[in-house]
Image 1: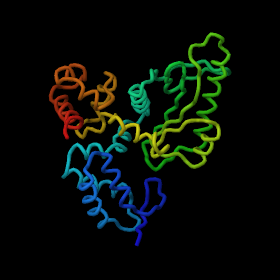
Image 2: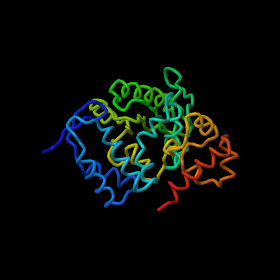
Image 3: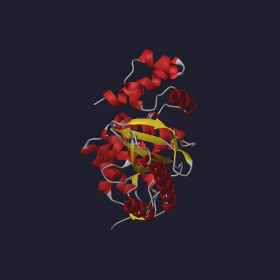
Image 4: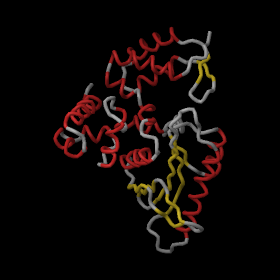
Length: 280
């Protein structure tokens, strides 16, 4: 008999063991380990249990199999840890785009047809420009609604109209994007699809969702490292260290010098980053 659990948004849904297995496989766990853990969790799942509690149970068991898989399984939590201002999330998404081949600028001021706009990210590839607004939520139960989609599209439209009037423009503003670390409401998605606004959110669109973009190239934020402290984040971000990959790509002494952290803390983070990227 199917068990009904409660999502972070408060909505009920049936517990599906395959979804739990898939999420652990994406984190790097073997299929056998994922199924073993999922079956253990399934025995403990009770009606109306919160998905956060199920996640914690799975992670506790996964940690016994593989420390690196445990870290990878923590993507959603790691993104929430980027807060609370939302600015680190903008920088993090800009880095993802850079790894995807875009040139990026964070918080540029763009002239619109009616007013001036400070946008979160301007991404350019070839001659195409994309005006991107990032909506960060510290609470996973808060979806991004249609009002936000309307706001983002109106800003993009004003910027595009101004650029279209420039005769010798080198950049053609092609599309507005709404990027969020939570889900979007049905109306927000419906509106975005209608007007051509691109949404990148949790679980949407299926092949280019936020977690897929992260997993495809293992672009984990530094907050995925279990030993990173909140007090260290400002130092790391201000020195351009956004991804755990940034740490793994440097030798130990270079990271110590660039990080702004004390030697002991830097060495611990370096070790974890190396385990995440170089362990089988």
